Image (cartoon, rainbow, N blue to C red; front, side, top):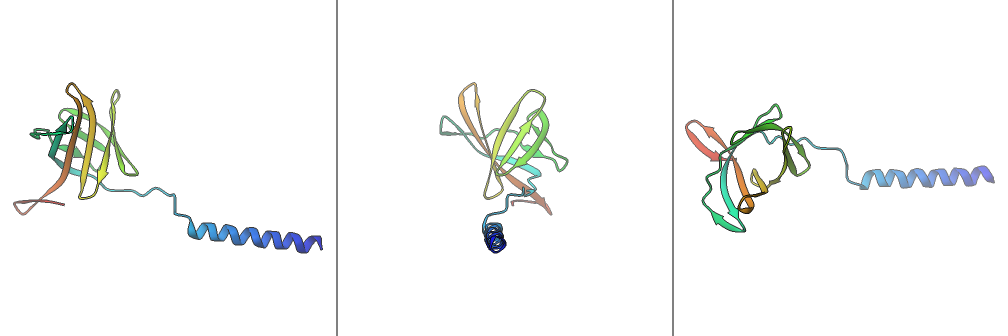
Length: 128
């Protein structure tokens, strides 16, 4: 009888494990390609719209970035792009419509910059 009970416990454990494997979402990381040139589309200071005079954000395919003289590396982590150099780190949120939103505190308080990816296509510029 002891073997039959152990066998039933093993079968029950395997059935529960199989169900959990099938129904639980996958936790493996997905690689999102965000490389490209992003133009400043909108800027806010203290929640108020201001003219967007920001330099483009350039995310290179080799994991490097450029933003108004700031250069370093970036890493995509879920819905965030983590920008860093040897001294500074920042996170920007990836949003639908090929947008990257960078929020940071500057000399005027909370600043939000919305960047949109654009491509040049036979002399035309379009949002992607």
